[in-house]
Image (cartoon, rainbow, N blue to C red; front, side, top):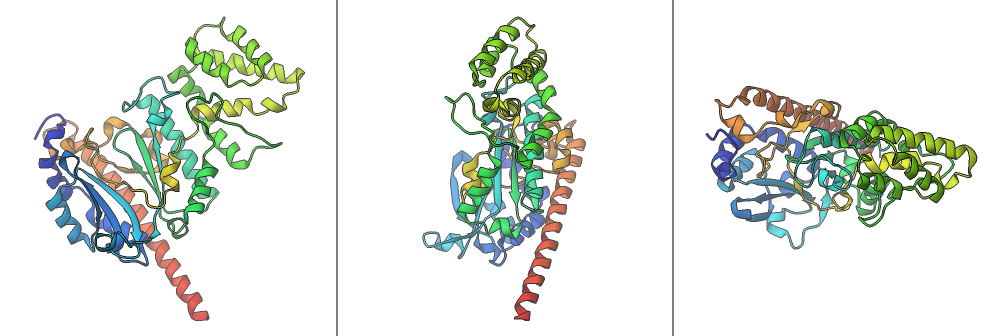
Amino acid sequence: MAKQYDEGMLSDMLPIYYSRHFPQSLFCRWLSCGNYPQPLANRELSFTLADDVYLRYLSISNQKELQTLFQKKCPHKLDIGPVYNIKPSIGRHDAIVLARELVFDIDLTDYDEIRTCCQEANVCDKCWRFMVIACEVINTALKEDFGFQNILWVFSGRRGIHCWVSDHDARTLDSPGRTAVADYLCLITGGDNQNKKVNLVGDNLHSSIRRSINIIDKYFNIIVQEQEFFSTKEGLSKLLRVIPDETLRKQTEETLDKLAPSSLERWEAFIQIYNQFCKHNNVRKIKYLIEEIKIQYCYPRLDVHVTKGFNHLLKSPFSIHPKTGKVSVVFKPENINSMKLDSVPTIHTLLDDSAKENTQHEANMRTAIKSFQEVVFLLEKTEALRRKTETSISLDF
């Protein structure tokens, strides 16, 4: 076994990984609950094989068929699609989508305009803090604002996180419903050419926005220090461009330009300038400017097309990321703050008993599977209760 990850050896390692480490039984149970009342065979799976060979509309009826497919095809990537009214592999042209988990995809590349530590595919512990905020904001909103309980969080394997909501009401949401949820959770709008991307209105902020700002406040000063948003001329210019009032913008530029290039010092000075300005001017247009800036720099940046799309395919939990070799591990949202990317199991350390990380990575893999198990058990319990309630109501009539 190679001491370091070698993508060229993936085809040799994957059959062993799928048979020894991939939680096949739990995976099928999770999908089965998400399929109800349709059979598991109506769920679409997609495989990406070696040399980027792409297979869609695959399906399984049970764990044995999954194991056979794994061994026969050895997928380098496994994606999960929707539930159809018929088996997708035999009727894909006439198939109608009936259900799909409500999914969210948050990728650090969407933070490239603000993060300074890394760009593109690179990721470190500093920019991972954006994922910590995203997970807490989205998870809290899903539970408190929508009442969802069956929520699965998964590391993408490289630079982001995925969220799967398996509650029956979430799975059966139509396209307008999914769009409404996505729009509700999306506060940052506009493309690269738009400077100010957050606009809060009204006499009072919505409770969900205020709650999100409270979550951001727990990390904001740390992120400002780590990312040094405002320490450079370019970074300071970005801040100035989101200030709509020309007088305030000029005052801010004159003061901050004289300070040492410390982002936190400049941010604290800006708050003082803003508060003093508000005492002597009509500030309705900039009433929530501080909150808007915090949101623009730290609020979750969702790929809304993934959430809105009823039939979007998303990488399966416990897939291997071909480029990094990392496992797409399940994690508890309350533990993401202590999650270290170096501690995420990789296929080569799991299969190489001599690797120095082997023991720790195996333990972390067991923890991830246990977290997955807890979500599956809760989903099965919830589904059983829901079906019993439906049966009882039906009998009453």
